Length: 200
Ligand code: C5P
Image 1 (cartoon, helix red, strand yellow):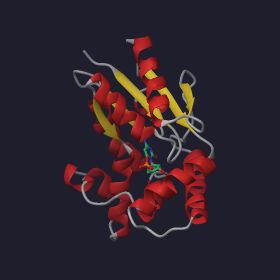
Image 2 (cartoon, rainbow, N blue to C red; image 1 turned 90 degrees about the horizontal axis):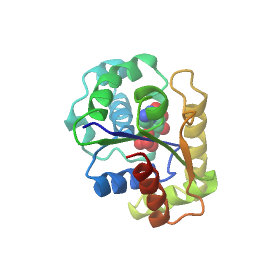
Image 3 (cartoon, helix red, strand yellow; image 1 turned 45 degrees about the horizontal axis):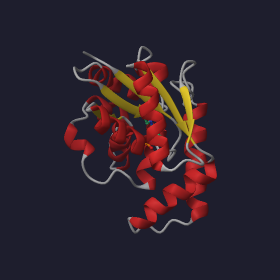
């Protein structure tokens, strides 16, 4: 049986944490689609061509540290290119319909990749809250960006992701919005689990 959960939203809203938790809860496979764009972004930072990189992506390209601010910005720059997005569609769609259920998180899962998903969640939070979370995450990893830099980065990335012509960041018409600004991780996960239970 296939069952697809699409989780979209802006940077650092809690999509990744919620996706991992609900995948573990229901025993579904999980794909963080941002990693695909980050892997392409990293190849471009290393001098590669974005479309060639997207067409040739392998699981090994998803290893290594792709969670840096530089790679995040490079990812959002390659993500505006229609040929890059097109090269990544088939893999995401086949992941979504595997037996046993799948959770995919990203920006365009509910709108473009899996418009037929049984559950669509749009996880968001205020820009300040998201920047603070990302700041704490990066500080723990020893990166020295200031709060202001992290906020500016998050805002720039959301703007590029929302304003691009191809598959912009936006909630699907039938998505359930979960604003995590004032929710603990446990509360946000519980909300997501409830929405999925309601549609099983
Ligand atoms: O989710 P994450 O922050 O890792 O995504 C990095 C970038 O990849 C995003 O800012 C966005 O530009 C792009 N992306 C996308 N579509 C997705 C997932 C990520 O355009 N489904």
